[in-house]
Amino acid sequence: MSSGTLLYDALGPRAGRRVRWFGVVTGAVTLGVLFLVGEKLATEGQLSADKWGPLIDPANPRFSTLWSFLAGGMLNTLIVAVLAIVCAMAFGTAMALLRVTSQPWYRWFVVSVIELLRGIPVVLLIFFLARVLPEIGIEFSTLTFLVMGLALYNGVVIAEIIRGGLQALPRGQKEAAQSLGLSSWHTLRLVLLPQAFRMMLPALIGQLIVVVKETSLGFILSYEELLRRGQIAIQSLHNPLQMFFTIAVIYIVINLGLTLLTRRLERGARKKAPGTPADDKTPAAPLPSPAALPEVRV
Image (cartoon, rainbow, N blue to C red; front, side, top):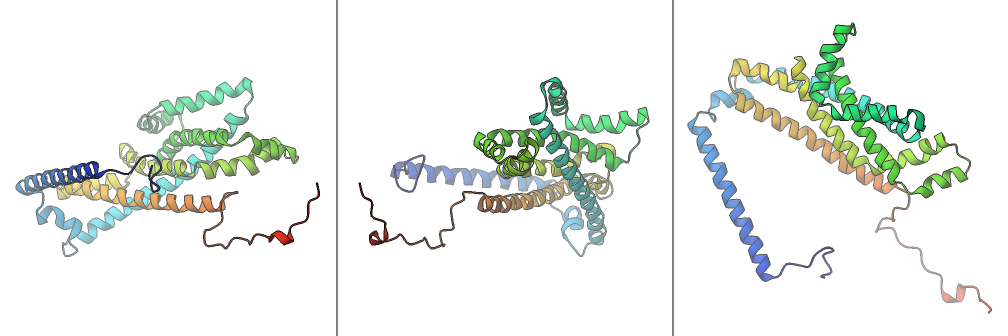
């Protein structure tokens, strides 16, 4: 095994040539497919300035109006995402704590609620809240119903993530805290839960990215988030392909930003974690000379 690899040996000359040829062929096939798709779109008139102008040409008379309209949709999307993320984190943390601290006589109820909400599709959950609750006299705004559906569904997923993080901690952490006289609640709040959050941070941020994407389900309630406003704009611009492509790029940019934030938070949490090795630039303490060591008599 070579010094630069951990799980496999370095490729030999034949294998290296095979991998390079495979990369060349794959790239050529990809370029060919893109060329055929572009040619087909050009033939169908999908690359014309009339369809792309309102989206990418500032000189187009509809450009500023369209992007002001879409900016309002992006703001509504971010409002729903922030509210749903906060509520899902609070609800998920509470459910995780209830599950790990519940007594046997009511644990079945907590587990049943978590499994029920996990098993219901999020679209059906949002539709149920918005259509059934008003029938029994519970009235909320469309924004509230959308946030409730996203928070309940993603909250139970976050609860399972946090529970997994708590169970993955070494048993000695709990025993050491209890040996210091901490109660079960203080042990969970001060010792176990912060470590579980730090350990499961990538999974938690990944679930929050899912929440941002699921805000697009607001169209079933006619809530004017980004996707819904894009659909409204299509009715006058008649460019569904171009509009949906632009909206997809916006979602990719938002989620890419969250991914970069995840990596930065993960690096920061790793540096703050107890037992983290010191920075390589920090000079090591000099070892004592043999003359300074105490004499040991046998």
